[in-house]
Image (cartoon, rainbow, N blue to C red; front, top):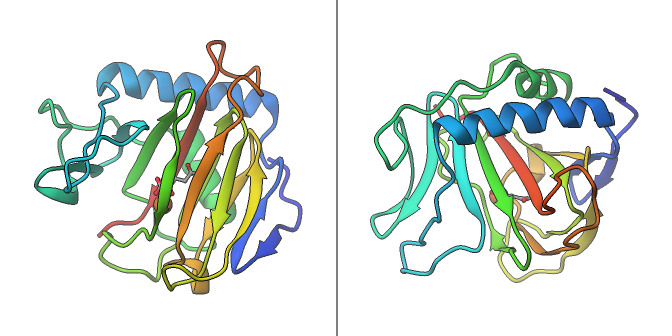
Length: 203
Ligand SMILES: O=C(O)CCC(=O)C(=O)O
Ligand SMILES: [Fe+2]
């Protein structure tokens, strides 16, 4: 890991090129194993809209959404436990989170061609003192960062494979989203697309 001083944008800490190519490849292999044990599913918002990303989780708790709402739960929608968070992923949290407790959720989002994520806050966790750590793998993504108020001004940055963003402190409850990806811009995933991991301390 290349722990150079992060870029600070609106309270978001952006560690550019934190992960080497071989570290990224190890992460992809570990995430594939998660998706084999707990398959990616197509989430639906409480309002009934299908999200464009596919998702699964690792850890004691996984984040899910369906017509009943957004929540963390101990099982995949198909009923199995979530696989453990891989050591390769925990090492990133240890390097950048600045806190001594471990995350209990690693949400895995897969962005295929055309996928995006609307502006939102991450606020289903029990305690906002802990940061959220986001890892980008594969195709570049246009990441939009706002403030704690919906609809305020924003700033955008292309996140590349191996970049890691820490949303803590004043940015912990800041709005953020992904406007688009540049499908095919990275060679990390042979079929293209982007994996984003968000590490969360839920309880
Ligand atoms: O894909 C990203 O970079 C952000 C994902 C995100 O904000 C989330 O899963 O809550
Ligand atoms: Fe988020």
